[in-house]
Every structure is written in structure tokens, then in C-alpha cells.
Figure 1 (tube, rainbow, N blue to C red):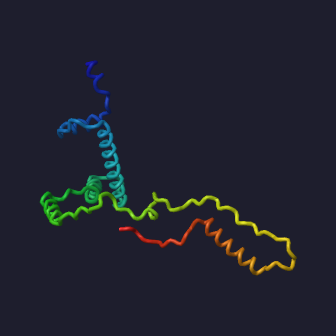
Figure 2 (tube, rainbow, N blue to C red; figure 1 turned 180 degrees about the vertical axis):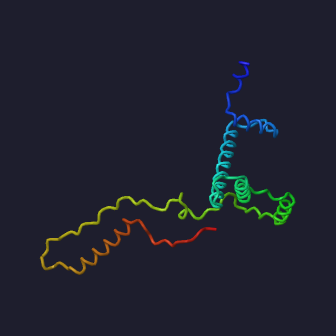
Length: 181
């Protein structure tokens, strides 16, 4: 008797009943967590049925819950909680109808078709431009102070600044093409 108690750990009464029910149904190999899950389901189901029957009894202005309230609560649970699987004949007809349509042809390109790299998250969508050299400083010649042409100097500076800003940004006018298919 001491050997038997060492083989199997002591189980609560409800857990032993659930394991006996599983054995009577022919289930021999199951995880120990299955018993706990079935116990949890049974506890939740009975609690919900008794709460619903209590609500039905209160609605009928009864002091105690009787058999009719419990039967009504069970009937309410069964109607919306449990469904029967569709008949085998219906599933066979559905499978036959679905299998009438041939499968699509295998494309010549294998793998997943992705859009162009610039549209993918894994693609490089930026360009690194090294620091551009500073713009050349205008040289001031020591000629007469009246000989400086200001309009020409301004136009040259504006051309230089636009070129350097375009170079600094590293962006060129590229056409935005859509997915490459």
C-alpha cells in the first residue's frame, strides 16, 4: 500500500472523478493540465448556471431557486454556448464544391513578390552624402573701393548657395515609380 501512494500523488476528489471519466471514455494518455482545465470549465459552467437561475428566480419574485429556474438557465446556456458540428455530408459537399475550382498556376518567379526596395521597410530609403566642402570665400581684391560690382556678386552667391543646398541635401529629382511588377 505504501508503494501505491508513492506512485501517484494524492489528488482532490473532483480531480479523481474527472480522471476516472476520462478513463471511462477510453482516454489513456493526457497531460495533467487537462484535468485542471476540465475542472475549471466545470466550475465556471456551474457557477454561471446558478447565477442565471438566481436571476430567473428573482425575476419571478421567488424566495428560493427551484428546478424550473435551473432548467431554464441550462437551456439558455446550451442554446448559445454549445453548438453541434455540421453533418459530415454537408462538409463533404462543401469540400467537393470548393475543390471544383482549380488551383492557380505557379508563377515563374519563386518566392514572395515584394514591391521595389525603396517602398519596403528593409530597403534603403536614404543616401548618405559626406560633408560637402565649404563654399569658396569670395576674394576681395584691393582695387578701388568704387569698382565693386554688387549685382554680379549677388547673383554668383545665389547660384553657389542653391548648388550647395542641393548637394547638402543629397536629393536629386527622381521620378517616383510605383511597385515593380
